[in-house]
Length: 251
Ligand code: SF4
Image (cartoon, rainbow, N blue to C red; front, side):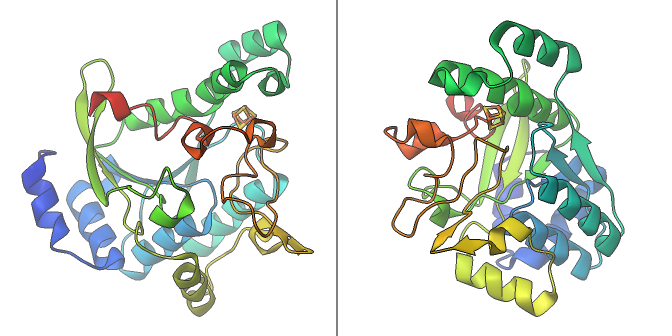
């Protein structure tokens, strides 16, 4: 088993291009590596890069049970095109029922604390569960997505779970721009989420999450402004669902 340490990062750092990097990771780790995607362009491009390099990647999504219908349709399309399974990791049904019973279905409007409670149960916990099964987690984070994400590294070792097991978190397309991604998608016929092509009077979807909590953004708005719009007085660091924040204090 390849240990997760700085030496591994040093070896992988030498591979500059995303396609060969993803290929190398799956060659070394097989199903102990997985691409996590919410259906954004970056995630689908990573799947395309993997398959084009002759790799059948393990892919998962966190299915909050509140995703847009178009998101579910996209995953069906990805499965068909790339002949793979997108694992749909769902929230714990008992905990979910208890939360909804106590706080209501739309608790995220009430306070930042309740929004985080909902995100924690529907997103962070299921994500932690899938991390139990991997050594390498490939994410679609990009530096140009928000101020909070500008300092994202291509490689990061995170401490997972109570025993703080090291997991290598890789963001192979961290330096790609939106333009590059769009060009790649067009050249390679990558399935694009229909909402990412939606545009009305300059308003468009910058990111994809749960219905209600995700709205389009206007031409001059910051890229995360469409998430939990009712909290737009907060720093964009506070406009993360928690999946990528949960390990920050432990690294
Ligand atoms: S984005 Fe909204 S509905 Fe989805 S998990 Fe977070 S608070 Fe809940």
